Length: 318
Image 1 (cartoon, rainbow, N blue to C red):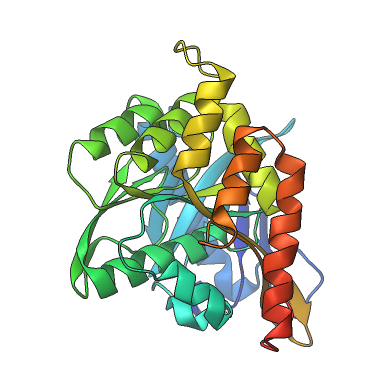
Image 2 (cartoon, rainbow, N blue to C red):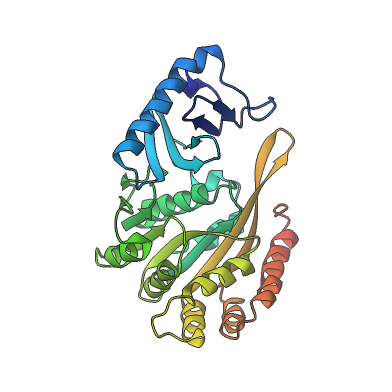
């Protein structure tokens, strides 16, 4: 049986011969590959080594092997170098299939949306999946041109989607900030940043968000308020002459939404749990005021209010 027919999430391949599969259901995690997978695992390791030998500066890179797409990261241990391969989906899930409540979907698919839309969460909880589904849904329904800035590109977004088109671009030189400035010159209606990681990228994302673009990005955080605070902290760290008040004003003006998510095991399946911080007509003015005054902790009350509204409507737990 080839690996493509096996359910797993990650592969760990050591340059000295170690190999482990993670995320295989109903097993002790991780497990060693079975005899039937050894040749494919050996070939997979060789492909990783060949790519890295040609591109030693790339410690994160995409790889397609035996009909499976991977995101590869290089981990250096005290004994060997290990290639960590995350298995990627071969298709974009429909936004309506993710388990996001209908009232949230209605806001997420409002026409003419502009500004910064953050998908937040901790590692391994599907942020990129949700962000990619949002990009696909919006350009399919409303048309326009989307540009993604990813390192490396993960989901198969490149090409035509309904009424719109998406161009996936890797970050090869100059970093995310430079790539974001370049993308703004290509006249997209939507920019998807794989992740806000540094000060320059955060500042460029804010600039794009207040200049008529919809900017979708992911961020690591434990809740929506923390995601806002993290973007502020990063953007405020760039030495470009901007004051903290300038950055707070840009963030308050540019932010459109935060959707925080986590995956929880319910019975035998994983269920998406979400927390909103949406700049709705009812809640947006107050939330923006909290951001301008740097009262990030108080944003939690807005999230709780929006969650309560949905609970009252009887839709489902969030």
